[in-house]
Each structure stands twice: as C-alpha cells, then as structure tokens.
Image 1 (cartoon, helix red, strand yellow):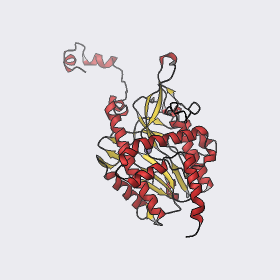
Image 2 (cartoon, protein in one colour):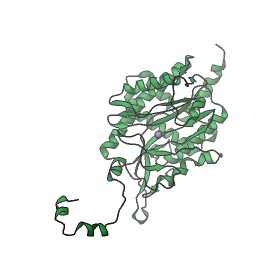
Image 3 (cartoon, helix red, strand yellow):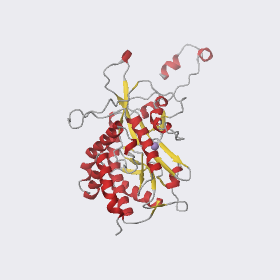
Image 4 (cartoon, rainbow, N blue to C red):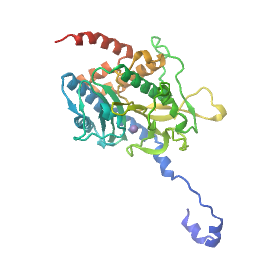
Amino acid sequence: MNPSAASTDAAPPAAAAATAAVVSLESPVVAAKAIKNAAELEGMKEAHLRDAVAICDFLCWLEEEIAAGKTLSEVEVDLQLTGRRRQQPGFVEPSFPTIAGADSNGAVIHYRAKEETARTVSGSTLLLLDSGGQFDCGTTDITRTMHLGTPDEYQRRCYTRVLQGHIGLDRAYLRPTTKNPNRPSPPLQKVVFPEGTPGSAVDALARLPLWAEGLNYRHGTGHGVGAALNVHEGPQSISTRYWITTPLQAGMVCSNEPGYYEDGRFGIRVENLVVVEEADTEFRFGGTSFLRFRRLTQVPIQTALVEPSLMKPEDIAWLDDYHKEVWEAVSPRLADKPKVLEWLRVNTRPLAEQVASRQQAAPAAAVPA
Ligand SMILES: [Mn+2]
C-alpha cells in the first residue's frame, strides 16, 4: 500500500470498511522460499555432492567395521556419519537429528537413538539410516536402508517393493541413453504431469508396488525442503493429504521417500531429494507445460536388499542409470580417497554385475577359515 495515497484518500474510513471484504491469502514469502531460483538450485546441487562424499566415506567405513566382526551402537553410527559431514566444506549442522534405526528400531518412523535404547549394529542388522546436513549452500535429507549381512527373502521382497515405489515416482526423468548403441533406450519411462497438479495426485505412483502386495506405509511420500533453510517446508506435499491442493511447480524441491515398516521387526525407507522442472514433451495440450522431477541426491542404493527376480527391466534400467549418474557425479571428488573411490565403483556397477559378484563371493565365504 502507498502510505501517501492512504492519507489523502477522500473516502471516510467508515465507508471504506463497509465495502472492504476480508481476503485470506498465503504470504508471498511462502512461494519465494518454495520455488528455488537458479542460485539456490546450484547451491542445493553442490550441497548434495558434498553430502555424497561424506556418506560414501561413512558407508565404506561401516562395511569395513562390520566385515572385521565389530559390533557398533546406533549412537556411534550417528557420531561417525556426522563426523564425516563435519569434514565437508561449508557444513553447519545436521539438518535434523539422525535416525539410525537397527532392526526393530527402524520401524519407529521418527526414532532417535539414545544410549539407553540404542540397539547394536552388527553383521546381522537391517539398518535404516535417515540423516541430512545443513551446508552454507543448501540442505540435504537422505535415507538409505542396508542389510549388513544376508537379508531374508521377505526383507528383500519388501525392500524391492519400496524401491520400485521410489522408482515409480522418480521415473519422471530417465536420462537419454540412445547415443550409446550398447545401451538401447528402455521402453518409454517418462512420468510427467501437467502444471497445476498437486502432490496428492502423484503420491500413488510411489505406493502402487506396495499396494499390489497388500502393503503400505503410514507417512507422506514427499515434503518440501528449503535451500539452506528448513528441512521440512510447505506448501506442497506429496501425500494422501488430498486437501493440500498446492500445485507442484518448477523449482520446488521435494523428498521422494516411500517406506515399509513392521512393528517389532524392521523398517525400510529409500529417500532422495528431487527438484521439479519443466519436461520437454513433444506436445503441449492447450498450451500447458508439463513437469517432471530431477534427482539431487547422489548416493548408491544398496543392491544386497534387491530381489532381482521381482525387478522389471525398466526398474533395472532406472537403477543402473542412477548408479551411473552417481559414479559420474561423485567419483571426481574422491580422488584423494582411493578406498572410498573403490567402494563407490563397486557399489555403482550395473545390478547384474553386482548380483553376479555376490553369487561368486558367497560359496567362498561359506568355507570355514
Ligand atoms: Mn525426508
């Protein structure tokens, strides 16, 4: 409002009040925060690469400790992971208290390890690890679930369905592979949606593989994430909360985090952050633009928990493509950490290669020392 116009307005205050309607609108600050500008998106991308270095370093260390027969506590897992984030440039603090839930603690969705309730992490643990960092340039939030020994068939089945849900929502974007004749393009992968679509309309994409088994999870699939701001922010939401009608808009950052939990047994969640961007569709019906997601998180997804026989060819194509992207993005930052670089190489190989090398290793491991 222009203050000088108000003071010289001829209409008496009472008359103005009689004709004015009360309008309730969302603060323009909300959209300014939610829709990231180019500089904020660059910062978010950079934060995720720094975060990836810390997490790969941590996972490499964790596997080594477990292979050496050590037993850790959930609290130590948190300290070791946060310590590695702290070594990254521009690290400020964890973006929320780390959720390191071993076995049944993984089923507690907002679990926080405390010395008195912490379970041990050993060679038979299914570990859910949800954590994030605030960096000077951006905010991260990532969940990886890993089995530190040999998962059973049921755990692999549940994990695979969660991963397929994650892929189902993310499939909005698959990098073109047609230039390489040895990697022909898999069937049409795109899931794009028209502008104006609220998150609730795409939520089911992440649940369908679980629903097909009669399984589900009791939390949202995705929340907004601030750029070096709140790790949970609105106004958009990818969830079954259908009354949140805020459309997904280009520049919004969301999590993609389907899961599956069994009280007293285990918890599974696979979480990446994605950014909404315009999709290059061939047509634009009625002049509408179409949107898709682009991944920000660049950390391998453990394949020991994947049941290959349940994966469709397009799921495998997605996983292999994601791992290739992770390798290309993160490996240049690990030149001074040869052990972690090798861990990254091994864990970003195509699924078929990873499965074959596990099958080769299994009989040897069964031979008593
Ligand atoms: Mn999250």
